[in-house]
Image: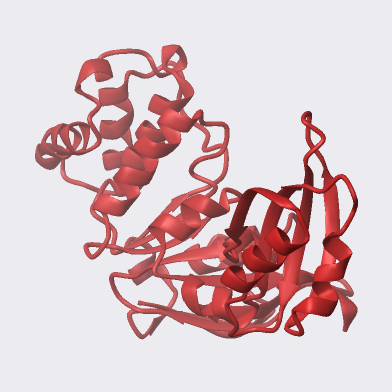
Length: 310
């Protein structure tokens, strides 16, 4: 379990973190979202004990962070530095030595992690000759040495191609339950698929903590996207025909000169059937009609914009 209580970090007069408090329960995977410079990396370094807060406290399993429980934390920073001249097996064994594993246990630990992260095909290869995807797996293997209870992963998917992202996602998902994980990523679809909850930080302050579903419901808008053939520009008449419509926005034309619109209606009302009927009455041909779903990207942008307006 990870808990931050009223954590502030100052650099001179600048507050990198401002009274940050949150809790992550044992076995959870929690996404950590924020723009560049929002305070994510500073928070992660404070949790791992790499830097100290100016004010406030960090607890791991109800104990203040210190020498005793730092060994319970595995930290994978963005662009993890690796020892490129070592083989995969040598690197994992070296990390086991750094983390204080007995000589007799290092070989067993390396073999276990090589198997767990599917590194058998490259275990004797020099790290500098590996692909980016394999390097990320090796980094994660180094983090997992000693089986730490808490994992702090800062942008583990950075620079990966789509196939590699899926592989790393599956690896992280497989760790759920056995480890408590705080994960930052700019790939919000990954956060949505992996994480139980998200924490959003902006300008050093926590602005939201909830499940992605609950956050999406908070800003849910009733929006329908339509693509139509409307040579006589009759679509504006729809607003007078359906009282629940609050706005119609023209998005643009496609190569066939079909027009795309975004139609917003009162929340909790499904106007699709009535909309299709009214469009037909106005001799507007429907090419495509679909109800849009609020995404985590929408939530993130909306909350950050709201915070910026305060």
